[in-house]
Image (cartoon, rainbow, N blue to C red):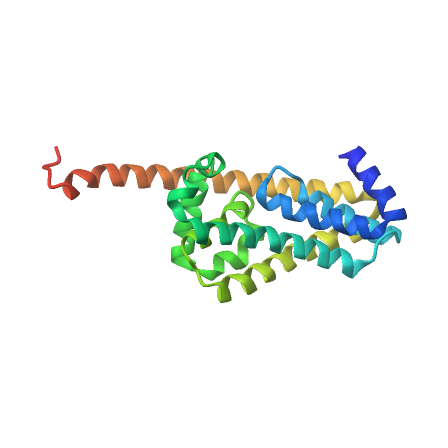
Length: 213
């Protein structure tokens, strides 16, 4: 990231409008390709605010708008094309355990999962497509998603401002949080998937009118 952050620093100093566009795009792409370190870019954007290279509110709105656009893009994708089409996509197949957990949570807790989604690493990238597959109403999903995004990005920016020159320390803390909680949620997702598969296998003979042994 050092070369990228150096480049972004120079861009902010000479072409701030383009730097805001990069913050927006990184937030969009993070939703589509979770390995992209969107949180790191947001924290660095806050550091640039502290340096006087960028302004606070444009950084907030660029990152919030980017995250919201990425979330809604996946929501519309799930709602429009449904499970049949999306199940053929490789990245959806790889995310099946997490989607199963997200679906279970959404069926039980509804819009509360959307409210918390930005604070749920490992599920963050699949909650949007899951609520689309479940056809949750947009009037519930959009405000909840924006609130969650605003709260999470606000914390990232606040942390970056507080950290100042030590912004990488703030990134390290966020990374540890994402790694630990993300690993826990993935483990839970695998457990839920295993339970669902075993339950389905045991029920199938009964559903087909066979006598289970």
